[in-house]
Amino acid sequence: MNDEKIKEKIAEKVKNMPKSGIRKFFDLVIGMENVISLGVGEPDFVTPWNIREAIVYSLEKGYTMYTSNKGLEELREEISRSIERDYGVYYNPEDEIIVTVGVSEALDLATRAIINPNEKVIVIDPSYVAYKPCVELAHGKALVYSTNIENGFKVDVDELERIVDENTKAMIINYPNNPTGVTYTKKELEEIADFAVEHDLIIISDEVYDKLTYDSKHVPIASLNGIRDRVIYLNGFSKAYAMTGLRIGYACANKHIAEAMLKIHQYTMLCAPITSQFAAIEALKNGKNAVKEMKEEYRRRRNYVYRRLREIGFEVVKPEGAFYVYPRIGINGEKFAEELLKKKRVAVVPGNAFGSSYRDFIRISFASSIKELKEAFDRIEEFINEIKIEKTI
Ligand SMILES: Cc1ncc(COP(=O)(O)O)c(C=O)c1O
Image (cartoon, rainbow, N blue to C red; front, side, top):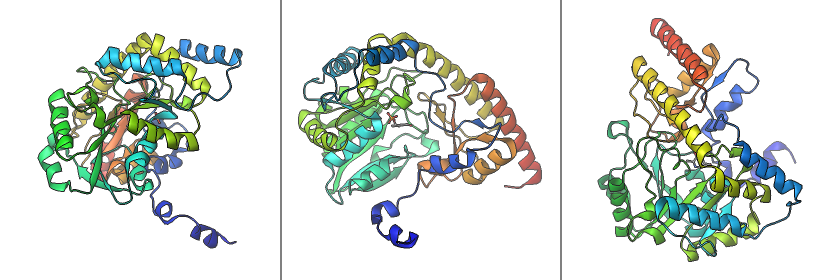
């Protein structure tokens, strides 16, 4: 078969799906030297030593087999305990918690478990790149609602009222948010929860950055009165514990939803890697101090980056969590990112990777040392001065 014939065999849905705007851009970075990358959403810290040690011990003891589909009982119990301790929400480790291959798999399970063909799911832009593809791969339709910088990227429930219809099944929320760093207060969450109840929606809540909240206490939407059973709570270890490559996360939900998700997980993934499950147990038992230290460092970087962006004069909302900031730069973000990379060897992500309404935004990740951030911002400033003079963009 020639290439054209082979391409015809690809499912339409997949063929028409754009590549991740982040990856597409970072293919350009590969092979370039002296690049400072403020691009990928990955901690620059190594997984804390006690967690790596737990991995080594587990291997030494010969733990290399499958686990229960749901995940190791000890891990599910630790997850249950930690959510109850931190947030006062109880999930039964027996039938309401599934250990997954990162939040990524949990998101895939959640969407596939609840969406029938052509049912709609509200996605709030700017949004993490996987939400729309996951909804579409589950044969649903993403109902995109775009927040704006003037409103601090917050959801306006009155505007949601205008787009929701009887074919809308669910909504995906994410806070602290990738790419804006914005989080929600309890009051704002209550408004979203009321809206979900009124329209009988399931809420898929991606709270993977909960532990990286800088100015307030994180409130899981599932902890609000009367809402828990319509929430699919997603969380994981990639970000707070610097465990991205270990691919471990979890989903918590009412037992009927969890059972549906587990069916898909059983057939497609079987179980999360046992080694990473041991790492996750150690993270939950003894990882608090390491998370605290990393969070303090991110907070310092957040303050530094925010100050530099303000000095440049970009319109910017101060991130309250995660390790991203999403300034409006006033010129085409794709062109800006390409030229910045070519001329100054600094990689940022064009804002439209997170929603088509954000052509003049970029996402900057501050998961890099202050030294690197300083050098990167010096170069960005130089670049801006040059393009102002040359009027090249
Ligand atoms: C909002 C959000 N959700 C999920 C993920 C994926 O997390 P995991 O590594 O647990 O699959 C990311 C990674 O960047 C993210 O930013």
